[in-house]
Structure formats: structure tokens, C-alpha cells
Image 1: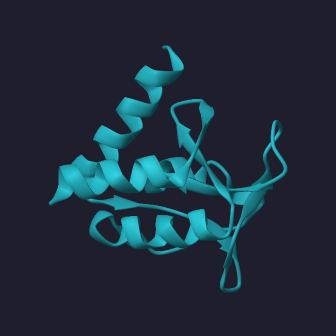
Image 2 (image 1 turned 45 degrees about the horizontal axis):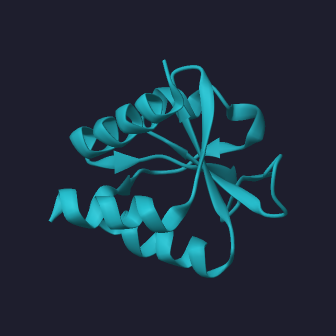
Length: 108
């Protein structure tokens, strides 16, 4: 599956489910280094099952409603961080601002 198709599938699944999942320790979500830029990537999962596949990186937190996600993505953008979206069997690196805008348009 092409990268753009994977991204579209991730967005569609998140909108359909109405939630996203994160993992972390304590009250901090897990981030990883971006392999191509000097920034951290916040991990987002389209399902609890996907998040549970990565327990070595932290515990699964309660879901975040898609309606709340654009504001969270705005804060990620303000910090100069990016996103690592897990879908199927791979990470998709994405910028938060375009995803936030798409969610605002599609969920409204």
C-alpha cells in the first residue's frame, strides 16, 4: 500500500472509530526521534489493538476523542514536533497541522 493510501486509511479509520490512542508512562506520552528531521514524533494509534502491539514503549492510555484531537495537534505543532501514525504494520510520519485541518473539516 502506498504511503498516501496508508495515511488516508489511518484518517478514515480514526474518523469512523471517533477516537485515537496513545501510549506512555506516568502522565507522559511516548515520543520517538524523527529519522529524517531534528524533532520528536508523537505516537498515535487508530485502535487500542494497534496501541497494545507497542506495550514495550509504554502503557495504553484511555482514548482521545477525535473532536479533541485538532486542539492537541495544534499544541504538537507549536512545540515543533511531528506525528508517527501506526497503521497496519508500519509507521507513517506526518505533520500535525495538515491533519488537524483535515479533521476539523471532516468531523465538523
